[in-house]
Length: 389
Ligand SMILES: *Cc1c(COP(=O)(O)O)cnc(C)c1O
Image (cartoon, rainbow, N blue to C red; front, side):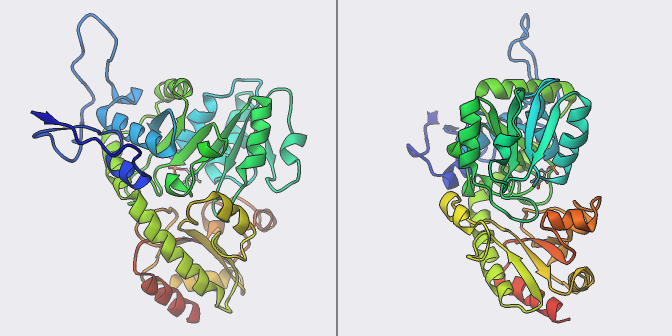
C-alpha cells in the first residue's frame, strides 16, 4: 500500500533541503535514500532509451541530489559533477565555442583564474578579466563576440559582495549568459537566478556537502542548457561517483541549520575581532564597516560563514598566531562543520607576488576564516589566546 506524504504546497528551503526530489513514500521503502553503488543497471532490450551509467550523471543518487539542488536554487534543472572545478569548466565549455569571448571578474577562485587565463584561451576562447568595481568596466570591455559574463560572489577569500543587478541588466540587454559561482552563499543566503543570473555554479565540496568529506560540484540552469553541460561532463569524464552523490544528499539535509548556525557564529566572531587592537581589518559582509555591507543587506538572506582578518603586524605575526590555535584548524578548504583558517599567501594565492596579492585585497597577514558550528565562545576563546600569544 502506498500513501502520499507530499510536502506542503510551497515548501521552504529548509524543508526542500531535507525532502526535495522525494515527494512520495512507499511503505517499507527506506527513509534514507539508498546508495546505488553500481556502475551497471539492467538495460531494456531493443532500445537505448533510459540507459543508466554513472558517467552520464543518471545514477539514481545523482538524479536525486540534482533535482534537490535545482529546487533549492529555483532552477529548471541541475547537474552534479566530480568537483567544483569540473562544474565551472563544463559550465563554460557548454556556453563557449572557439572564437567566442568571455568577460570574467578578476575576483575569482584560483582554479577558475587558471581556467580562463590559460586553458580556455588555448582552445581559442578569448577571456578578459574585469575589475568588478570599475565603473562601466563590463560595458567598456565588451566585444562583438562576447557570449557570457562570469562572476563569483561573495568573493573567495576577501568576502566582497557583488551587486548582480547592473551586470544582469547588461547581459539581458545583450542576450548573453550571466554565470555566477555562488559557492560562498549557498541557496540559503542567495539564489542568483532570482537576481538575473542564467547559470549557477557551486563547489559542492564546501557548504553544500558541509562535512569536509566529499569533492563535488554543481551547475544549475535551464533544462536545455543543462543537457549541453551533461554532454560536456560525459565526454570530458567529469561525473561524480555515486557515493559522493549519496554523501552530498545527506549533507544537504542539514544545509539550512548548518548555514544559520555558522552565520550566527561568524557574526559573533566578526564583532569580537573588530574590538581587537592586533587586527587592522575585519572583513565580514554583516559588519557596517564592510565595503559592500549595503549590497549584502539588500540582496543576501544571510551574511554567511566566511570572514577574513588582517594582522596589523603582518605575515609573520599572523603565521605565529595560527600556530598557537588549538580548536581552530589550519586547512585550505572551507564550508564544513569545523572552523578552518587559511593564509591565502600559502595556498590559493601562492603563485602571486605581494603587490599582485595586495591589489586583490590579500596583503601579508591576511587570514581567511571559515566559521564552523562549534560554540562561538570557544571559537573566540581560541582566537583570543592565539592573538595574545
Ligand atoms: C573551492 C572552490 C572552487 C573549486 O571547487 P573544487 O570542489 O575544489 O573543485 C570553485 N569556486 C570557489 C569559490 C571555491 O571556493
